Image (cartoon, rainbow, N blue to C red):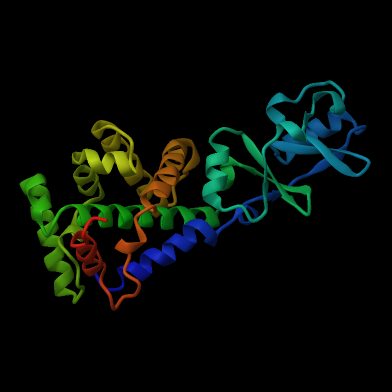
Length: 282
């Protein structure tokens, strides 16, 4: 499909380069290690802040989380930097997602010093929502490409229920009426495309090491995430697990061989695929 490759390449850049840690980080508030404990605790509650830095000789040496704050001296209850995950300000967001899947917060460093902090609720911010929407779009585009490359022509139609196929045909007709050139497979629902991938053990092993039941569940969660994004609903509480999953899954999807990617919109990827299929074994 002409133009689709350029779209995928653009979305890849969004996924890997478009947004970075500093786009969603908050400046970290910090206190001297000798500061009054009660005053710091009150400050964290009033702001409110999940994490504060603790300084010694003007340098941050550790952090305290509000959830674990007690009445001991600050120096006695801090977590040292050696025990805290720190990322660079230019770290891509998909790496931040993976890091936050095992940590409650991340420190963001610049010039060798912590200057910011990221918690999961920061993923409610507009830059993160923009990135997530692009990620969901790239997820579906990549899934469509994988399935279309695997099933020759429209051979996939025999594996889709009559009602779902009818909906796809109807949507294609409506888009063509609006002078939009789309393939029938592009008009399938996300869940249908996932079902086609999950039917193939080869595709599951290569791109998505999950059972068919697990893939169906995850795709339902992805659709839920997309709906929440479209309607500006809260994300983190309900969708955090699927955000982590889709981020890691996309990394596998983006491993599609470069030969299957059209070098330009003037060279559709199907011709590239045919050339590879006809290549003699070495």
